[in-house]
Image 1 (cartoon, rainbow, N blue to C red):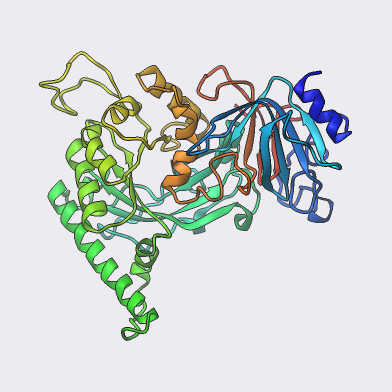
Image 2: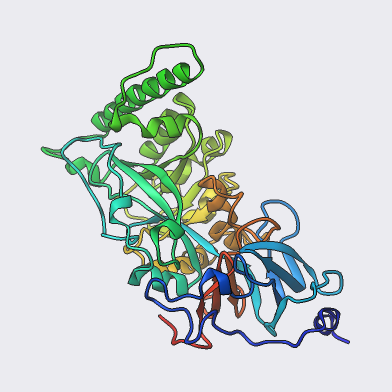
Length: 443
């Protein structure tokens, strides 16, 4: 008897094909899903759900990465258990879905997106705008997010544009839920910093030295404000006057959010690492990181700074962008591979959507392998899931198929970094929000 049959016999239940959580499939209009009192299997308040898959990609940061002939149990919107069918019994009363030869994996996470609502929110009156918040412009489940969802992207960091040196505060949100309160993962999702390129066009034009001075000055002011509040709350100082411009620094100091950096070219990536991480001690990650940025990879690893690569996947041998003297001038350099060669262990991928369409996040990982990334430890899957989850400080909730985490689960036809692979169904927090068996593919 096959292992899958053993699990079904234990449960005493008939297999059910993939099916929508409400008649007609996942609806687009708010309020169209099954009410909580009649929640579908796996959702909060509903019966348990067992997914039987040929393979499960756990994406755990440490430990087993693949489970063959897997049973994934979902209850009340969270993962209850994951293991081989012959040792993972399905509790009585659970709905059982046999996925056949399909695989399951965690939902993907994109930490650089401008399509959570109104595209590219910028305020360029001042060179630094830490108080700007994009949350007022969020449009949950908008058409761009719906396509992203269909490709397996379940969480995005929607951030301001890069028109100023410090653009403001982003929002971490789920892609497939209808209401802001449901979709919100964390606000602020990050403090957006942009170095080199776009912010140099501010007013009459500024250079790297002025940008570095402006950032350092803003970080000093903000952290002084945050430390004054921390001292007051500890009974060691007077109550500071509230300053809306600087409130986000209290979140940064408390390690409740991170600095995300639009940063590229070696010199500027180096400044991101040395100023924001080493000098100020804040959690920060490289975002973009092209044009020789990987040359700072060794120091990034030493100081615990992850590299979330994209939207460019390669450095081309063009002297305008970087002086290739002393390297191989004929080589196209894969950025993920270059960071890996420099010793960086936490490498993720982003789209900078709509620069690269949000629904093509998985192709960013595929490009990484095409240009040299060693994928022997499922670095592509990890770079789409657990690495960005840890980088954003949300790995306790999402990013891997581990008990206790939110059941953001993809049903896929094969390796997610293979462009031939298709996403067949998507669950967010145990809710089935996309199923190709009952609605047309979105891209």
